[in-house]
Image 1 (cartoon, rainbow, N blue to C red):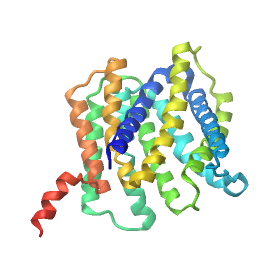
Image 2: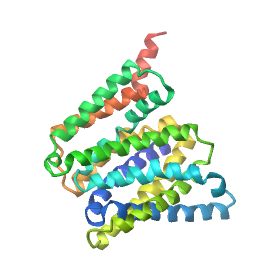
Image 3: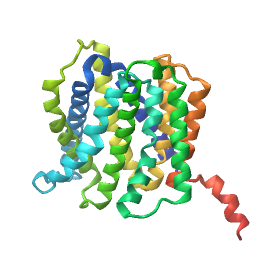
Image 4: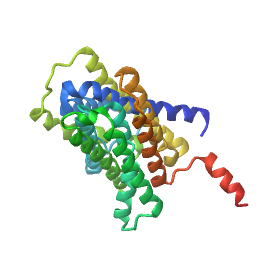
Length: 302
């Protein structure tokens, strides 16, 4: 991973970590349905503009909606519509810091789903990682002031189900027909917009948005969904999926940082320790080990 890709990785973590800040700002006023319809709608329009530019330059690929519409709907549901709605619901109660760490449990869910999917027993290291992750979440949430708010338990459950939904999407993507990465992002955002739209009728915005809130919504759609996808797929192209997924370990750091800087969320000992335990559990589950830790072991084996 060269300097340019490292900068892309850090930028992506900062952007995705900021998504929880923007949801925390906008969700209490707009509600989950309206907020997420704005988010996926803005993202779909932005990606449509990018697709048009790519076609003009002769680099674009068609969505082939007639051929892949079911694929886009499944991906749009489990990778965007459902987890976005659940995180937006949780954002009305939980802090941006807690949300970002709960999101980091997605790889742990992915390993569990993968084991069930493949009908294989869970390895000892994976089981230890799952136990650590569960303990880290309990520590983080149990000592956080947000846990004292009404509905906190339901909000935590919603955020964990959102992370679980991402793991379903990942497993599906591994077995689905091959579709270009950009087309996946573009098509799934339009599918998510269609899926969320009916909910807006039944769950309208509880408040009137200000210019600041709409700016947060625009950033959530264009920056955290549209531009972030472009950076992410560029990383996959340059360094591969495994290296690109290390962004999971950086997201909570920025989620906690932005929450402290802009929302004045307290960073207690439980925040630091709980986050570290969750990330350690994620590392064990995914088998991720930094090269600087692997190198001494490799040298000793020669």
